[in-house]
Image 1 (spheres, rainbow, N blue to C red):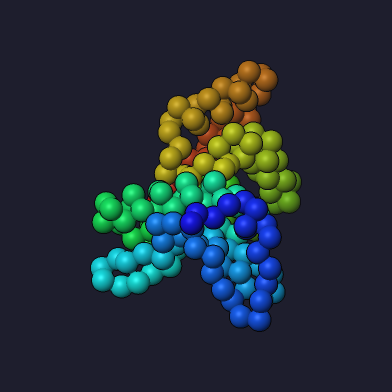
Image 2 (tube, rainbow, N blue to C red):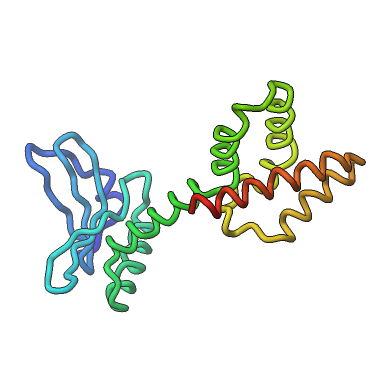
Length: 182
């Protein structure tokens, strides 16, 4: 018999963890501390595995079933949902560490320490005011010439031509640094 929202809500903790089955391998795991987890048991390459679908009530029964169907589709296509989840998480963390802002700040730490305090402040201000708000969050490998050009045009539209030239010079140095450091 499939789970209901009422059954999920009314499930009380016991001395030992226990499961309330839904269907197609999905169940609600209730721990002695009262925490409730949606899980999916499946077989992949001959091994029994468990996939976390979410924590109840943060993840509703409907959302957990949608995630179950996505996972079952991946399994049918020969993809292990746990491995896929790890790969997506790794790619996301790599894109955050390879964003323009992170690399620019790394470049700044390496190259600006020998410069005067006034020059350091100007470059820091340039980053924070003119570059980071527009291209700072983008992975550096995803920034196209048109993205940088649009950013420079915003600066030029303020009639800050010299600042636009400096932004181009500094961003070029950051891109070269990114290529050199991998």
